[in-house]
Image (cartoon, rainbow, N blue to C red; front, side, top):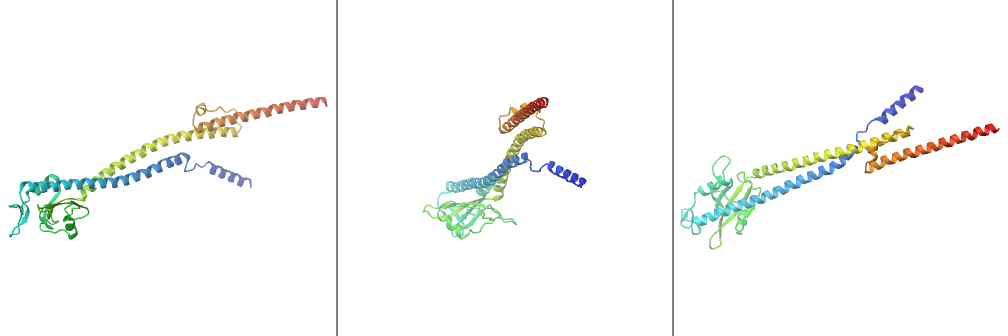
Length: 299
């Protein structure tokens, strides 16, 4: 029986001394970093969406500038309206522009954008190519797209995926009588946008991770300092419990101006109070002993 009780006491002691996994420092670190991680994730998500929207807007403006430039170039080079002659060739004033790709090829080389000249809803000349090679001259627009061009306003479309190109701007071509006879089509692949967004998002994530690491370091240092003070308070109280009322307090901990410093100072006051009580009890016991001795002598 005795041996069994000793074994149980040892188990209880070992269990009581086992260090918990979620220490106070880990809890403080988790409580501090978890909101920051959530905020960083939200910032990265919202930032990526904002970047995509902003870059798409810039792409739309760039495509429109190129479309207007092509329209103005044809207008300045050739006087008159756009017409189709009996042979099927498209003319600007008296000059045939069918098959003339030097202008759009030069723009494609300098800007990286794909340029097409549309007469009606057909691509008369274009820099867009087929996967197997060759230009896609003579291909038609979808009816709903052409109907929107007929309004005379510039049109911006995304996710079209025509000839592996995703972003399109259509700048209407308007004759002197106000009729829309076609459009300048300017396009660029989506992959360029995705690459740009990916690079920007990586930068945002790297900055967020750096902020979290700096915060984790600061919180870790502060939490260790707090835990150190709590351990010293625990150790000091433990000595009081063991009857070491003459234990010297740590003056450095007593000088701390935070709540943990208050707890340590209260522990010191507790020690002094208990020491005073014990002293009074001892003095009372001595007085009682002296009185007892007197009574014994008198008896």
